[in-house]
Image: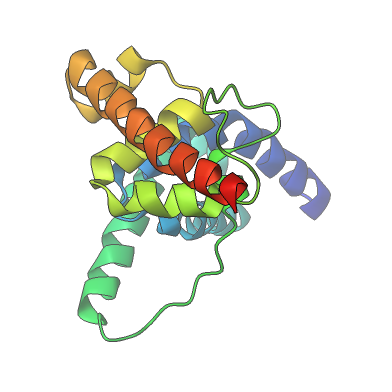
Length: 182
């Protein structure tokens, strides 16, 4: 396969599998700040495989990529636990994590200025809550889909989602009110 054809094939596979791979990684990672690194490593490993071997040997490319993700997650957290004294610097871009211009996010109190604060607050909560928020608002997953993927009751997902949304409104609306008084 020529390099150009291989790149076209990779792009086609990437576009077809990205959403499921992202969903898998988000639901199985320990820290949502690691998602970008994990997804990048997954597709880098898949590209290396494509350059060495024939894709005809793979029954399901989607399942194969999820398998790569599983291995990446294991290696990543195993080495991270082993080297816990190494500080990893990650430059946060909160707007990318939670809000997109076409997002259906109903939280009107979130502005470009406080997105990073909101995201920081959500990440400090239970990891489940951060994952639920990310899946619901960023991936536009339905509550029953999140519940199914995370093996939780729908009512639990709703409870986490709505309780956290209410907390955010109370915190950030109060801050907006206090800033307006100044």
